[in-house]
Length: 170
Image 1 (tube, helix red, strand yellow):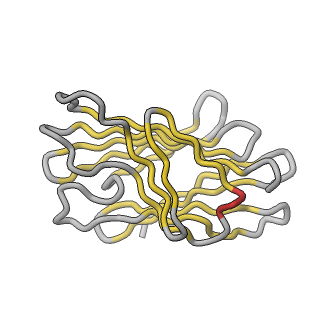
Image 2: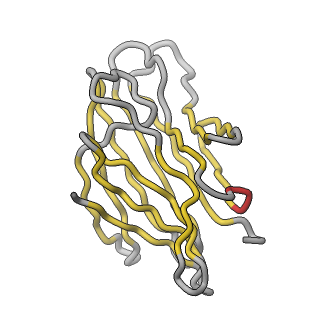
């Protein structure tokens, strides 16, 4: 089983971790809080679809590589497909602060029926801040969803960017 971890820590050692793990036919990921002594507490877990889904709950990412950016920070680059759609994602750790940056795109023919990123809430997310660009964030007691703005009738590529960070009081 292949897995990769990217951590984004503040100066005090407190931060966030995203761990990518192979789950059946794609990479799923979990986001956890790291405290100052290195203990890890799960907060969010991606909700994945199944191989038969043309429009899975979260991007179906089947290939993963981790690279170092010029800043020295790690970045995960992922690609995958479902139905007739192709997906790509990059996830990087912000420099010097507990923040993970997600940039996801889907190239699709026709209208995307349901698209975005969805997480099951696994812990106390009151300390998290999810900020999206060109996307809507919605949270319930059980899930957090990030859905791109689908403006335009002839959109063939959907893109959504979001960051997950620890709140100032965390």
